[in-house]
Every structure is written in structure tokens, then in C-alpha cells.
Image 1 (cartoon, each protein chain N blue to C red):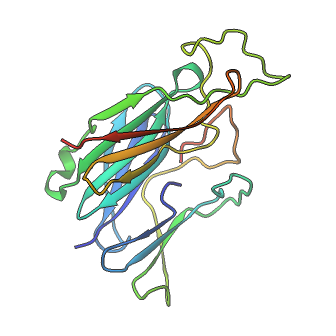
Image 2 (tube, rainbow over the protein chains, first blue to last red; image 1 turned 180 degrees about the vertical axis):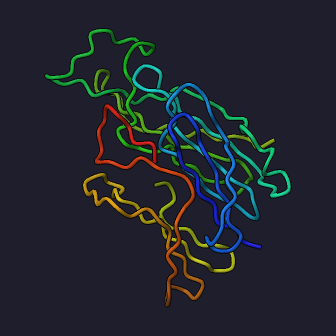
Length: 153
Length: 66
């Protein structure tokens, strides 16, 4: 049976919904919650109920990217709760220009900026999950992307 | 919006329709749904989504939740 999934943020709570009747009805469970704002949720699926999720958390100097993997079992939906997530810093920072000078240029205190980008996800053929985040660092003239593969336990 | 287009192993197509374009250059309030086709796109059923999302034009200092 194929299912339809939706992942979205309601502030400090990230929620996942599953429909087995093409969107006519949904079952909703929380998958992440905390004190930080959660945003830019990204969801991919493989097979029957295997999901990869990414999102960003926090603002300005607290921005982190988050990646999670879950095998959704409808029988356990009510107890899914918060899924284990891997959080990491990424190297995109608020742009430095004439009107936006960040005098402190340590990575700890510089404001990170997603620039509106999601943390793209994909399942690899070897079974791993991988994410890509941008590198946008005008202060150090460093641009590109970071590719992070994760072995699924 | 995350995956704006998805196709199941059996060919069912889902298209996410949101007020804000992926480029964030266009914002049209009032729609937040998913369109589903089980016949290869010949016909579509519009479905609502659970939950509440906060939609607005893009603001770098206040990221959208989506």
C-alpha cells in the first residue's frame, strides 16, 4: 500500500502526517520539538514507509541543520514521538556587504543564513542517506556545497 | 514546501500547491493543498492538508516555517 506523507512546521514543533487514502484522511504525529524555531522541512520517501527528513532550527547564530531517518510503522504512529536527529553546523553565512558588516568573523558568532535554501536529501543506491547544504561565505570568499552521507543503522 | 512533486511506485502523482513559489518571488495567499492524480495526470483531486502553516512573503530575517 502506498502512502502520502506531509511534513511541516508549527513553530517549535515539526509534524508528520500520513494518508493511506490519497489525502482524504490523515494521521498526524510530532517528530521534533524544542525551544528553537523549526523551519524549511524537507521530506523524501523510499519503499514503504522509509522516510528521510531535514529541517533547520534556530535563528541567526543558533541556526543548525538537522537530518533524521525513520521507518514509519502505522502501528507505532502514536508512539513515534521525536525521531533521533543529527544536527550540524553549515557554512552559509549572512552576506557581508556595505550595509551588512559583521565585524566578528568567528564561525561561532557569525550569523548563519540558509539564504532560503532547504537541506536537500536523497537516498543513495548503497542504502545510505545523504544531504547537501550550501557554502556561501562572502567574508572568506568561499562558495560551494557540502555533501554528507549517513549510514542508516 | 518541500517535495513539490512526488510519484508513488504505482504511479500515483502528488503535486504540492503552496502560496509561495520555490524562488520566493511570487506569493498568492489563500491556497495550501495537494493535488493527486491516479491516472497519469488525466484527472486531479484537490485535497487539504492537516495542520496550520504560517505563510507570508519571504523575509530573510524571519524565516518561513513551511
